[in-house]
Image 1 (cartoon, rainbow, N blue to C red):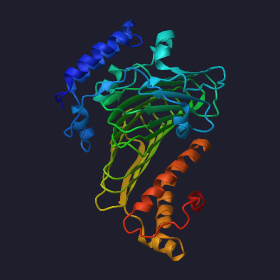
Image 2 (tube, rainbow, N blue to C red):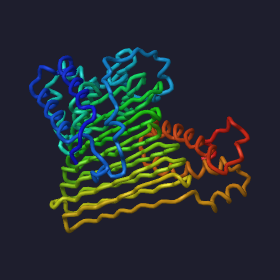
Image 3 (tube, rainbow, N blue to C red):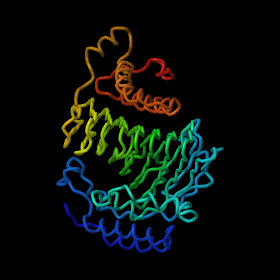
Image 4 (cartoon, rainbow, N blue to C red):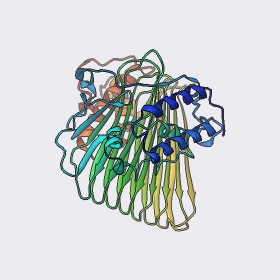
Length: 460
């Protein structure tokens, strides 16, 4: 659907100023990439609910808001970020309002063959490493938000792992929104290239320090070459006034193995796009996610998995927990192309609704153009099992604790698929605290935990 852009003049003015100072402004290929993307964005505008891929998500509020780009990174003290640090990370890049903060980042002691840098610095100092991949996979023709991100692609993370390298500890990419009086937009662009027979884990983490309307529109291009093993994590826990649209585009080579895990806890309106293309024979992909909504949060998960070669496997597992008047969306689409014989694909979406006003729209979808495949899909929607709740209460567990135990067991289905122990334990603690708050506020939960300092992990 082609729609008018309410703030077109604002975007035109912003893009004109952006071109004068942005990294790589003198590189013809990068300038053309941005200009083509902006032309496409101006042509199609923001999606509407008449667009099938956006049928359940209305982005008119984003379209109407007069967002501006952050001029530079706000000054923060390291103590302000202590609560957001990932223990045991190999290195940490911190981006404040879309710009790298060297003072807050720590590259650690990375082995030879592992390069981690800001995309802006890499474009300025080593554009030959960026050009073969940046913008080659993300579909700006199909997705207006991808086009908008490419238009303003300036900074983000650049990660390059040489052939045969194994990084035992994860790389932590922390994106911080500081908020403000005027609506602020950021467009982080990440490029991750993992060469043959290498192994790595990446954690993208989106947080807010203060309130205020903000729009984070991020895109990550992840290239996994032959026999590469990659784990990718996306954690979204921003302020409720934040709009977050993220797109992960994965290009998989022969016999590569990629697992991507999403945990959505914050934000007011969140759209999580995951688009792997299995182009090499024997590639495997796991898409695993958990989304937890309260109050009036809107959490939309869109998965597009393309099988283009034979003997590839993909698995999608998404669990949703919704309370209050929150609205969840799961749209999982698997396309098996003509040459992708012997495809094995499975898609599962499970949802818990904790209130009468919570809503879930789920749409698992298969498009199969090959004749020798094994594909299944399914979705379930339910409430907390009252029988199980009664059983726990009859064993002397108060109602808040009993509800929390059942919710944690449901969430653990997703956590158990995460291989990195440190990241999994970190997320389990984070989700544990989040679920306790939900269980404590659940309708009918009149009992309260007797010991406020109780170790809820022990109950799990």
